[in-house]
Length: 127
Image (cartoon, rainbow, N blue to C red; front, side, top):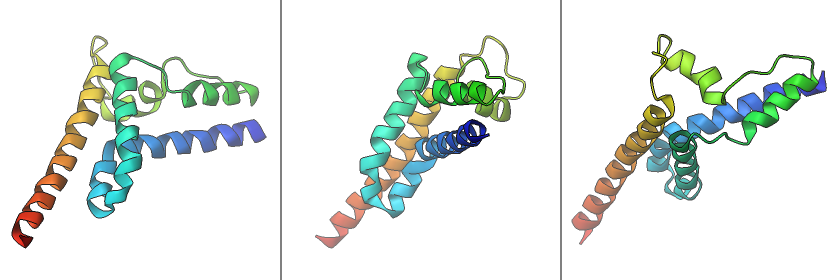
């Protein structure tokens, strides 16, 4: 019972981390000091996807699920939980890690690019 509860809690933590990786750049626009946490997080998220690595939270969740008598799952967290939502009819040969890794980099590049443009514009206007 406790293992199942911990696995669910870890799933929520993992999901929150993925959301932070993807959308955190827009939070940095509101709270700039958050960049110290977000930049390493989104670089890690991009690398995990681009390199085909397994996030350490995934095997931990799977072990907890098996300890609770539940079935684990094959593959990574993103492939199991996120991909079916984002790409429900994804072709088998779709390089999902590449698509998601590049997507994280592009989305956060846009967010940080906008943030830097606004900051430089404000700094130039105040001079």
